[in-house]
Length: 257
Image (tube, rainbow, N blue to C red; front, side, top):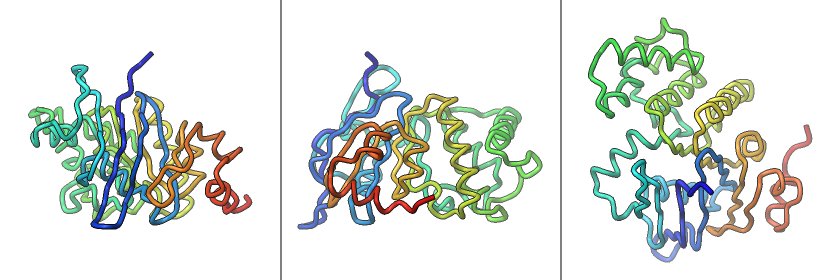
């Protein structure tokens, strides 16, 4: 059986006496999409920021399967190793694309920076690869020298996706990746994400309050309330047959289509 790519055990984050999340344990397997859902204040974003190294945990283990087979706790990696992981083997798609892009640098350079982080130095090769990735995320090749500040919200989000995926990462973190987009643009970005995740066999941890997004993208779901996991399982099972009262309430609040 394949080993997990990410393993979280007993994770806790405290802010003084306030608990952001506590007692959180789960695994993520290669090629699997796990959705973390819950209302605002449930702890889902705190959890995502802890496991992606953006927030220091208070207790627990977060282990990652390195390309050489090692499975260290992230706390045991050097600062240089953690930074390299974040630039190459991991990706992070923010809700607000401006948080994940350099807005005054060209679209091509935004993508090319990640390539340079893994040692690419040939300008022509970097530009060609960046152009290929812009095409993959449905951005016209002639926009390669345009800055993201001139792009629409949907284009910025697609550019952020290209920037993250160009180095062929193995694990992607997503924080409400369609939350700031209008409905028609959301559908386009979600369709693009679903295709890329499948084509590239990416492992993904996605935080969302939108259960429709979770159903579309994920195979497994974790439901959080008050910093705790209250239910977890296959996405379709959790949504079609919720066991916990809180999950039942979340599912019941989905508008009728």
